[in-house]
Amino acid sequence: MMDTFLATLCRSQGDHDTVCAVKAFMDAFTKVPRLGTVLLFLSEREKEIVREVWEKLGMRNVDGVWTAVC
Image (cartoon, rainbow, N blue to C red; front, side, top):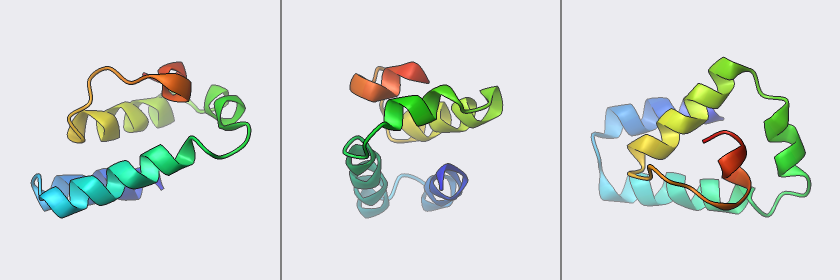
């Protein structure tokens, strides 16, 4: 999913609706039980993709469960 989000954000060139939609998905992920545990098992490349998604969303500093990868 993160690969898809990243590709979509790269192609959208900052389109506001796209950014808002991806951000909504990223925020919704925080409601998934044990997401923090899942994030701990990501490879370094997978973590880099998550960081790139957040950067494309304009978020350099994230909080909550996402700090495990960012």
